Amino acid sequence: MDIYLATEHAYHFIPQFNVEVARDRVEQKKVSLIAGTLGSLFSRAKPEDLQLTTVENRVEPFWLLEASSRTVYDRARTYTIPASGTEVRSVTVMGTDFPAVPQPKGEPAFTLTGVEHCVQELETRQTFDGITGAKADLLKYAGAAKTEIADITAFTPDGVLVIPPQVKANAVVRQVTAEVVQPVQNVQTIHEERVDIKTVDLNFRPIYAFEYEWAAKNKRVVIEFDPLTGEMRTGGKRWSDQIKSMVTRDLIFDITADAFGTIVPGGSIAVKLVKAVVDRKK
View 1: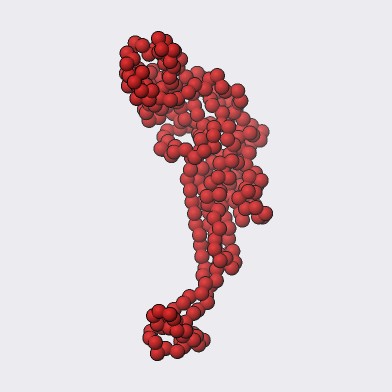
View 2 (view 1 turned 30 degrees about the vertical axis):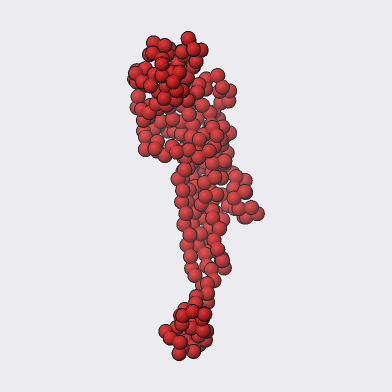
């Protein structure tokens, strides 16, 4: 099996709303947003009861991968073909005589053995949370405006908290490879086995997190604003006190042939790079 791996890329999505616009929109809806999540206690709150304490402008990582596979193979197959009537005793096909065997139901039938020439093609396009590695429904961002990050180790936008991915490229590549590497049945001969990992993109999407406090009730809640879509939701969190690690290319983009060992145990796997995956000098 040959696995062709495309060059990895990193991108930063461009916010469509700035922090000031987001803050104004959140302020207008903070009471209804919080009450809808936390129930009757907050439904009794007045706008002035909920005071903004912190604003966090951050980017969160997610992976976008596209993969496909192509398997060309032959398999033996026996065909049972009904004859035209009960009076048929044998059938000659291309100079070979085949007996017509009575069947429990219907007309007598004869059998032919042949070789089917098959092509199995599979493809997938998936997004994964860059922190947990779980599948995430983030394809809605695929067409959003973004810029490529030339040097990920130097990606430190002014005033923006960068959440480093905790899941490396090899982990998500292994997941999409498992989806497109599926067994074929009754194989006689395999002529071609190929997997193309067409896209390995690490994306950073912006999030604005507004933390509100209801001091009289000693309650805090975080409202997150998505500056790509304008959507707002409660139940968010602040990350500024939890980030310890740094973003480094060597630790994130670490795909090797060993990453595929669990997909095809004992298989002879050649990982052929479409172009250089990592410039180790960066």
